[in-house]
Image 1 (tube, rainbow, N blue to C red):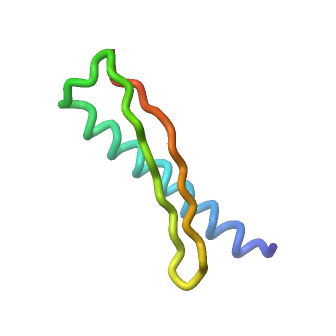
Image 2: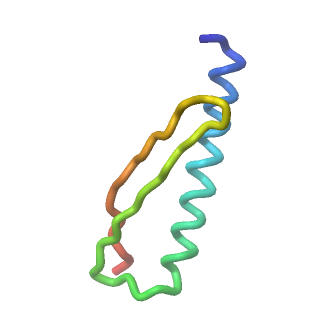
Amino acid sequence: MDEDFNMSMRKFLKQVGVTSQQAIEEAMRDADTAGKVFNAKVVLTIDGVDLEHVVTGKIKGRE
């Protein structure tokens, strides 16, 4: 794989990580999350490529 591809993919994934963390923190900041565990899901698709990648996990609420 070429360097331009790797750099563009890493830049995209960094943006996903940073903006996703900010969105989660904002959503949970004012919600009643103490002692709760939330199911989370991310669906990644790429237009023009047959890709649908699903990642699931759990996020523990603030104490």
